[in-house]
Image (cartoon, rainbow, N blue to C red; front, side, top):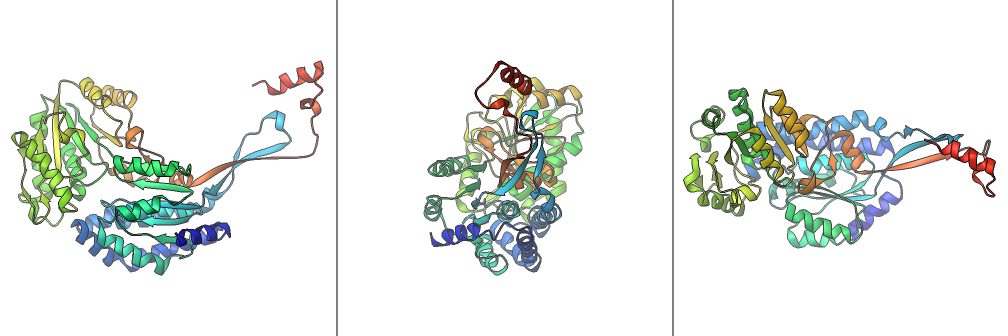
Length: 456
């Protein structure tokens, strides 16, 4: 593909390495966002029925805060990082130099089509790379908008947008890149990784999965319910780190369900379909998929269950004790259906989580220190969030990424800069006072001195 050759040429000329160029591109992206704010909101509304408030909080301001962070920290992040130098290599100094990989491919997802394309791009550009953006074709209006705006504001010799469906993506993955970041499903993640392996290209995969939410008996039930409902039904449940299912004891389950019902009404009204703040399923295919989950568990629906295929609307729905081998409990739901599974104890809840693939996020609501420590020490997840959900994403000091089946690699703030950088070790020695003890022939004295010099 000729445009990739152009990007490679730009990188080889050293265009993207100066801090001034990187900062200039970040400021250009900021102008793009500010000058096209309403167009961004309209595209998100058309693709996902996102309210302007939700679009602003989870997409628009998120990207602006990313830009602000990197403009502030770009100089310090790019500096060589001093490390220790052992006695045997003195006089000399050792340090780490962050250097860009080259031309990187960023494949975004449709559920947060602005954030999940531009946020990784910000990190990649800040690290000094050229970038190919591949927006998701499922969020067609946003994809078209990105393809229209990026060339108007960004350096076209260093940043390109490539649109298209499966065939276009397949062709793109056949090309050689220096780094690939993909956000999306585990199935496509494996395809991306296989394609990258042909060129031994490093990858970062943000894959989601089923993020459990454990509710202890000892919790603030009202606040717990409000935070779960907010996190679950943000973007109509189409969030990779949304609580996928709840684990709760039989004793607490009736109290929790009642609190959750009240919170749905409080946040979205008696009829969420009429709420300006409740989104829609992205397309007919995903609507049919989620509706199929519900149809198979119809007798277990304890709240909600309404749907409208003409509007791709599925109401906030609770399913009690679904079949643990059903698609609802095996596949990532990515929609407004919330399974609630009864357990006998927090120990059983912990075991339930550990018997499944490692999640991208794990949520625990508890005021019991012993339970908190057990979950913290005896489970593995991309992120553990205690007494809240999803909100950890606003902390740019925290890396975001998965573990095991939920992904590899991470980004956000410094972590994103390092992901898109090769941290090159450099040792710089002096010619002064060259020590001959390392050179043959090795006498007894040299051997003794070497042992002393290399002793830890």
